[in-house]
Amino acid sequence: DNLLLVFGARYDYWRGYDGVSDNFNVLAPRTEYAPRARNQVSGKAAVGYTLPGEWNLRASVGNAFRNPNVFDLYAPDISSSGVIFAPNPALTPETVVSWEVGMRKRFGERTSVDTAYFENHIKDLIYRQTDLDRDPTGNFRINMNAGGGRTRGTEVAVQQRLVQGLQFRATYTFTNAIITSNPGDPTLVGKRVTSSPAHMTSGQFLAGRGKWTGSLAGHYTGKLFSTDTNTDTVKGVPGSYSPYFA
Image 1 (cartoon, rainbow, N blue to C red):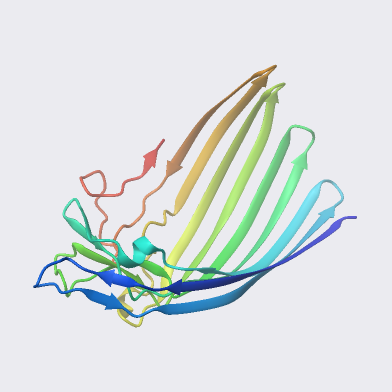
Image 2 (cartoon, rainbow, N blue to C red; image 1 turned 180 degrees about the vertical axis):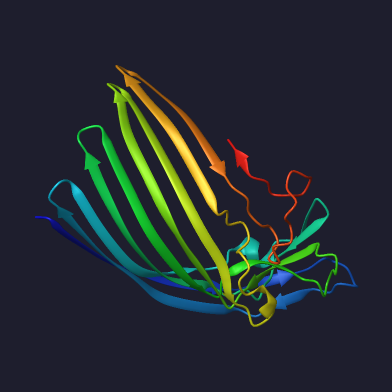
């Protein structure tokens, strides 16, 4: 009764076809892209065990598949704050192998705590690469496949019933996501993955009385990098991605 096993599998088939770039300009002739296809079987296995005293332990391992979408592949160049974000019709799907261990504990009828440690090992990671050959100022960023990336971190969640009809929930996540391999630019190895903040936390009050319910929530996202070179360290200026609370 205390042991739970979960197994799952999924099949993905991805095909990119009829890709065309046409600016209707003699200086930029129509370009057609060759079709490509990929398939993968993904799986997951998880185990959970409940110990005396309301201790619940869990562990899981699995792999997954993510294909580039039409926007990543074929969207027109987008300019924002002087930076050009470009698609890449040559993108290939990325895959990941991940594992996690965690624990959940209840303290009486009012409090529960959930913690977890996770790791993701990504191959052909899709991310924005700064193309210094195209623009030495670093203002041209194109979607690329890195050789690999690694994400590891911890999560903590707390749920507390304050009084009858009022609950408080809070979560905190620490993430360390770095490039582990990039044959196209080895200098990026060890750099943080773009758009991946190291710290995120949120809190929420949930209230209910009779037919009335309400909530009050806040979310904080810490510093992150928008360039693969991790050189955008100045925050609070136009074009930067600064920590924020909402």
